[in-house]
Image 1 (spheres, rainbow, N blue to C red):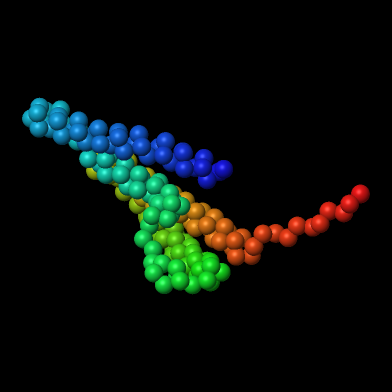
Image 2 (cartoon, rainbow, N blue to C red):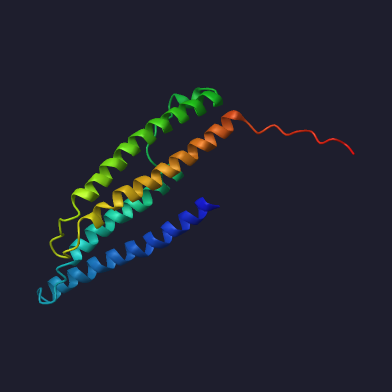
Length: 166
């Protein structure tokens, strides 16, 4: 249920965000070329660039959830289901370790670039780099959730106690 809610929130942010960024790009180009640059939006290029960076990192947990990221299952599809789940768990563990390294590096980038200002907008570059740890955190949560599901499936259903009559 929480996963469905998070997907709807991400879609509610990303879809209008992409449309707005494309619209801003269109308006910026029209102003630059049709009005000979007199009313050029000098800041639009940075907004579009940083906006699409945020869109990518916000969508990355959904890419993991839907399984549309690349994967190799040529050999594992012929293995028994239990072994497939064990290999998936091991792969997920390796992915989580790698994501933790990326998260640490992303947070370092946010901290290091906190005093650097963007050229046109003159905002801290940390705002652009913050998309990295946000997206990686979402991916970590998603991979952990999938690992728990695989573990539950591997261990089987919880045994139920027989009810006593009377």
